[in-house]
Structures are given as C-alpha cells and as structure tokens.
Length: 117
Length: 505
Image (cartoon, rainbow over all chains, first blue to last red; front, side, top):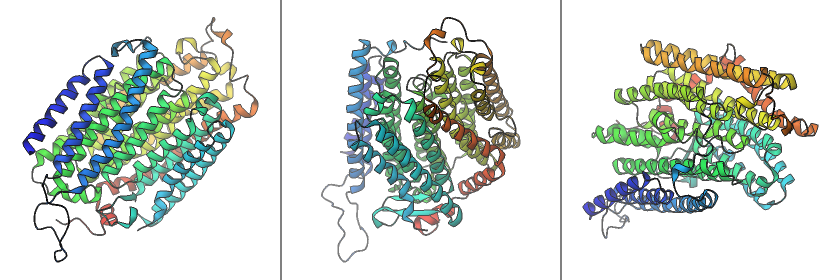
C-alpha cells in the first residue's frame, strides 16, 4: 500500500510539474491541481497508514503501545483540500476572464504591457 | 505568559471586514468603517507591542489545548513589531484608498478584502504553529488575488495570472515541506519542532525539507531565481494595492523565513553559503533590473527584489550583528516601500503616467510635495541620518567580519544603484520640464477638492514622519532590532514560553 502511494505521489508531482512547464494556461492550472493533490497524498502517507487501529487509548493505559492511525494528517488534508478548492475555483474563473480579454490560451501572449525595456 | 490579548489584532480586522460586507454598496460608510477599524487595529497593535516589550514573550493556546497539541499563538518582539508595522501601513493605505481607489472597486468589496488581507498578515505573524502559518498564508494570498484582479483591466489580468500561478506553486511546495516535516517529527508546533528537528539523525532529509521551505518562502518573498513573477505583476494593480503588496506581502515571506531558519532549521554551513549566494544574486539582479526600467512602478518593483537581498544577508551570515541589521532594515523597508508606491500613486494622479519619459516639472508645480517626496527618496537610499543608513552599517560590519569580499561588493553595488535610481527619478520627474504633448490630459490632483487632497497626502506625510523617526531615533530602533536578534540566536526563551519547559536533550 505504501509503495503504491509513493509511486502515485511521484507520478502526480512529475506530471504536475511537466504540465506547469507548458505554455497553455489550462495546462498550467491542471498542473497546479495535480501538484496540490500530490501534496495532499504525501501528507496522508506521512501519517503512518495503519488499518483498523483507531487512535483510541485504553482506560488502563497512558500511552499508545503500538502503531495507530494518526488523525492529524487527515485533518490537515481536509483543511488543505478546502483551501485548494477555493484557490482552484478562483484560478479557473481568472483563466476564463483572461481568455475572454485576450482571446488566447498562450502564456507568452500575456506581455502586452512589458514593452518598456 | 498566557494572554488572550494576542488574538485581538487579528479579530479586529476580521470584524471590520465582516461589517464592511454589510454595507456592500454604501461606499462612504465603508470608507469610514475601514479607517476606524484600522485605527483600532493600530492601537491594539501598539498595546500588544508594549505588553510584549515589558513582560516578555506572550502566548495563547487556542481552545485551551496545551502546546504542542493545540494551535498556539505567540507574540515575541519580532511578531509584535511586525504587527505594529502592519498596523501603521494598513492605516495609511486605507486612508489613501478612501480617495485613490475608485468607487467601482469599493463597491466590489475592496475594503472587506483589504481587511481580510491584514487579518491574514497579523495571523501569520502571531501564530506559533506551522500548519496554521500555512492557513494564514493562504488567507493572505487569496485576498491578494482578489485585490490584484479587482477592476479586471487587461494588464491587471495578465499580471494576475503570473502572480496566482507562482503563489499557488509556492503554497504547494510549502505544504509538501510541512507534510515531510510532520512525517519526520509528528509535531506541528514550531517550538516543539525546534527540539525535535535537532534530534533527527538523518540530516540529509532535514536539509532537503529546509530547502523546500526555502523555495516555498523564496517564491513568496521574491529571492533570486524565483522573483520573476514580482516585477511582471506588481505594477498592474492600483497604487494603493501595490503599496500594500510592496510593503507587506513579500515581507511575510521574509518573516516566515527568519522564523523557520532561526527556530526550527538552524542553518549549517551549506545553508549559510546558499543564503549568501542567493543574497548576492538577488542584490545584483534586482539592481540591474531596476536600472533597465523606465516606468517608476516597475523600477520600484525591482527595487523590492533588490532590497530583499539585504534580509537574506542577515540570515546568511547568521551573527547577531547581521540579523539585527537585517531586522532594522525590515522595519525601515516596510514603511518606505509602502510610501514609495503611495508616492507613485500621487504622481500618477497628477500626471496620468508613471513613465519617466512622460513625466517632468513636478518640482515647479508642487514644490512642497516634492520636498516631501525627496525625504522619502533619501530615506530609501539611506543618506545619514535617515533610516536606510543605520541597518547598512550593521550589514557591512557583519560582512567585513565574515571576510566575504563578493558580499561587500554586492551590498555596495545595490546601495549605489539605489542612489543612482533616486537621482534618475529626481532628475526625470522633478527637475526636467514636462515633455510637450501629454499636458492636455489634465491634472487630476489639482482638480481634487482641498479636503480630498489632504486625505490623499496625509498618509504619505505620516509614513514619512515614521521614516524620519526611525532614522533619528535609530538608537531605540536598534535596541529593538538587537533584542529580536538575540531572541533569534537564543531561542530557549521562546520554546520555554510556549511549551513551559526547555527542549529535552
């Protein structure tokens, strides 16, 4: 399971980075989304995947004796997902506006006002 | 010391933002509420600073969960000084905005977003939890996205794409770094992390994580290879927004860098060398970029990049003198950069352009304003005894002690170029006659009613007075900077204040 996740995270990061290097704005956005998902999965993996081991401590014990499913990374991911959802929806609307204004999906055409050099 | 007062500077801006939302279309009321909210914010920030200065580090555990389990808010000298500076600049920019920002923009929620941004900044400065820092960062950037695009003109949108893409990337890298850090230590509390990271045996992994943090914050604060988004986006929004961005947004990255690299990842030789190299390159490339520009706003954008180098120098040399110099420079820089952009806004109002080739004759038309602007420009360069001069003494002294010739040369070069640019601006904007052909545009500043003109210029005067106070009261500011530096070198009081005990060795 861990190995599978590690490979998946690697693929997500690599494809995200690859898409970000493209000139198309939509690909840039897709790249950012993939990177964000990769980061979320990474946090999930960091919290030690332990199946069927809830983080509930026995009444007679004062600390966990064996490995348990850490709830903190899941709450972190939840926060991160909500935040990235907001950012991504903003970015999509922004792209649409830019497309309507410039009529182009090419990042290199965004320099109309860079003329004074 | 536990004190719930810490959270007030954050809360007051949240409340102001919410109240302005209820007056969505009523521009006049929004203006008044914003100025009032910022005034209260400034008073609270001042009280927080005094409290922290008198009683030492204050902490607050959110929800009563004791550290390191809950979210901690910490106000040490560094945080409280930055909250105070944020209060000053926010009040001035908000005053300026009441006249300078168009009614249309205010109707689209300029002031509420403005206050959410300030709330995020205060939160970022005060939090003691690294994931919470990430959340505050996100609040800051989403507010800044909205401010950046508000109005929706074409150049603004083009700038916004670069800004949004780079900031989202930076956040992802920051989040990745937090994930790995949590995997290594199982903690998110910065004071707790300080002890735990020091115990990790796999130093390679620690260094990689530190580098990830550096890249994440580096994009946000625009250091050398990662700064390209800044000059291509900061000149697009209205001056008041650019003032806020230029003064505070890049500095929050610097704040995070100082916090992380003094508390959690104390830099080793490799990191220190990296910082010095990055600092040199930032100083040189920022300066060169600024020379090549003809528009005032673009020039100032590159100057922001150039002067970011001074902070990284402090981190790279990592001696108490160097850090104190960098902190002093930070205090000076927040005020002066905000003021520069406000100044360019007033010039734009008067002339309808920020292009140096189309400006001129400002001294002839506005002699008093020109003298005010001269004070700002001279403070920026640091003609003694103005505020930019004192921190540079420290930085040069530290660079001399470290015997790094390249660094000294870079510092001199950056200062020299800044001086050159100031002379250029002075000649082109103030001395030279106004070029013919553009004069029919009319002078918007002259046609403003007297009280509006007063409100427009007042914030610039206030910030100039603050700059002068920093310059003439350098002794006291240096005391503050030195206290911050000593707290950074010896982090035990911070850890003790948060956790209630020293890290177990």
